[in-house]
Amino acid sequence: MAPVSCSRLRGLLWLACLLPFAPARADAGLYELSITTDGPATTGAEVAVSASLVSKDNGSLAQPPDTHFYRFHWIHTPLMLTGKTEKDLSSTIRLVGDVPGDFSVSAWVTAVDCWMCQPVARSSIVLPITELLVGNLIVSQNTSLPWPSSYLTNTAMKVFFLIHDPSNFFKTASFLYSWDFGDGTQMVTEDSVVYYNYSRIGAYTVRLRVVAEWEQTKADATKGIVQKTGDFSTALKLQETLRGIQVLGPTLIRTFQKTTVTLNFLGSPPLTMCWRLKPECLPLEEGECHPVSLASTAYNLTHTFRDPGDYCFCIRADNVISKTHQYHRVQVWPSNFQPAIFAFPCATLITMMLAFIMYMTLRNATQQKDMVENPEPPSGVRCCCQLCCGPFLLETPSEYLEIVRENHGLLPPIYKSVKTYTV
Image (cartoon, helix red, strand yellow):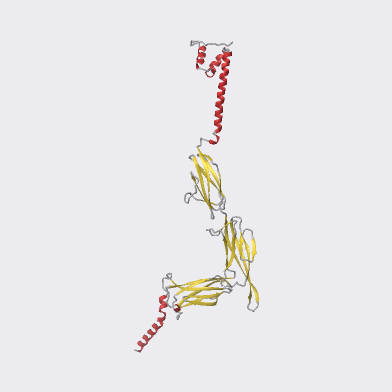
């Protein structure tokens, strides 16, 4: 009986030891540990790392009723711990690194009285430590554009450096800023903010070198000047608004004639252009024409008209900054009708008709005078003139018939000509 009693007693004692840790085992897998940091940091500066116990299902699971039941554990070597605070279900530690590198910081949560038990949650984060300054080079402009890193030419922009120093490590340091704007302009300032204006479109890179100096007490109690530097850069794309579209092309066109219209865009590429022919000059709506991507500021538009009428080239263009519309009216005439030179042939034809009428009038008057003064021309001349030119020189068909009868003896004359003399 003694061995049985001893075995039962050991089982009861084992269960009693496990009872305090039952909630920890039950909570395992229900929560997760979220770790954040205000790094990266420079060597010698403090950096904070925080861990929070949260529900896995985005907070719908109730938090533990007793927040003091859990304990946070950290591993942060070789970084030096300078402080630790815990509040509710979160814990924050402050670390300092003396050498540069990427260091892993791990944390896990267990029951407060059993750090060897299964963790409720665990997580880790990589903390970068560098010897250089940490910060950001920021560019802003009053004209806000919806495209990143795009700015307007001939408009002042603000360029400034924002140092990342959450622990106020550089509160006694003095800074020197060396600027290079990528277009040949360089300057050195003691202020972290400058204003600059680009006059030409293009892609530029702004480079900045920051030097920080401060006085620091060394290990042997002597004071010395410590210096840290940092190099930063950002890419810019300077654009120009579309001020308009210049259209070069004819306004009078014939059908089935290949017509070329040149478009010059007064703005910076890349551009998106579309066009359409309409009877009236109206703005183009979205989806009304097929867009064409352009890498230059000139484009040749070619079209052949098949039907005469009045047309309008409706053109729309836009770049990443602005958009504009332009119109070009044309008149299309049939191919066999040239209105520009129509007046010349008409004038020529009228002149020829007037000359012919004047000639016929003068010729008839001269012929009548000759007939009165010389009614009987020589037989040879009369015969030749009557045979060759009779139908054209005689006034009436009766005279022509009379001549024909005189030249043909077999035909008797119908009537005798009457000669009249004036004294």
